[in-house]
Image 1 (cartoon, rainbow, N blue to C red):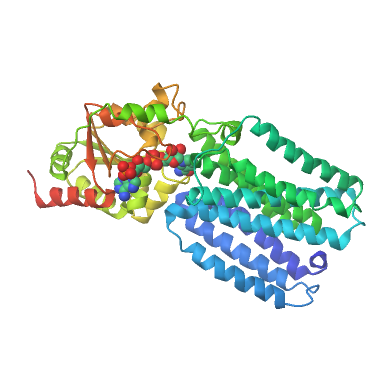
Image 2: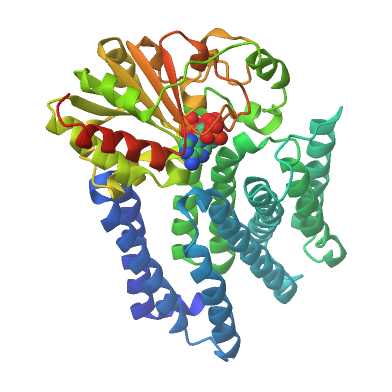
Length: 464
Ligand code: NAP
């Protein structure tokens, strides 16, 4: 890739690609420009790949064609997964990217050793250690999210000590390699130990924290790629890796904040363990249920309705029905808004994307803080497949695993209606006292079917 420095066409293409990556991230940060952001990222990546293929140092294209074919064969089905499976799909992408980075680092080491400067050896060590641990950690994270591995955190005494000790050994091996790059027998240690560490890192983390962990792994994969850029003297890789690393980090910070958790708590807190006592209380309470007819009658009398969407709306693919429901109510002169919790669903922006897909006017979506000041004026808060993000235990129950997480205070509305299929808990696995309040009506059923039935009642029953 060093030859790229002498080829102005490749250099210019790389600069344009870098500019497109920066613009892509900027545009992706607002819903109105997000599509343009995706396109800019795609063009940038296409340009970077084509420019790299023009490099004169390439001896044969045979292996590249094989890799391209394999990538396409895996990439197309991955791109077709349901939106609810995007977090695990993203984890798999990080696993592949990180693995590639570790492999390139390994190849570069054995090609160059022992003639490696301390700087390049340091970059190689960072690349290989981060790449290897991100590979196994991302596979574990994807497995937990896909529920092929147990979601429950597995912990034992001294676990953090053991994990950090193992990582410490890999770092020690890396330092020795920097001091003596010719010690080829040590190199496998900075591959194998981080592979084991990545696996151990995820074992004590519960499924509920996986999306945050994945975005942190995204950051590691980016940093590994940036280190690879220093090894290969590729400015493109340095910039793209740094962008990836920093944006993944910022996203993890946003997600942790929205759940009122710290990084150390996410990584070492074994979230999701203390759930049994809270769920135990559930049996005692009784809930009031209602039919679509009852719900429609209450909605007809309302002036202000706040819809609170959550993961269940995504699973049921109810967003288009919800849009119809919105149209029917607004036609009747009822004010309708959507309260969006930053971690509703399974990835940041999940609800925004679904509602945008159904063409719900964007200015009707309001953020959590604003929604919470509105709820006392709301006649009906209609919760559609959301659970944890409405759980009052986050504010009142110090023993709850979600204590401290900012939530949508739906119980402040005059009436609360909750559409869900049964009394199953949400992602955090805990019961929700909201369902037992006198003002709450449970509307049991699939989100899409139930909203459809309310729409039918509202349109079929005319004005009564
Ligand atoms: P949730 O707490 O996971 O609850 C979703 C509810 O939807 C369930 O209780 C389920 O109850 C119901 N449901 C499932 N399928 C349904 C269907 N077809 N129709 C109707 N209801 C259905 O969801 P949430 O309130 O959106 O909260 C998100 C959770 O994910 C939080 O714990 C959050 O911390 C976590 N998380 C999110 C992110 C993110 O970036 N968004 C990141 C990290 C963690 P039934 O089975 O009874 O129907």
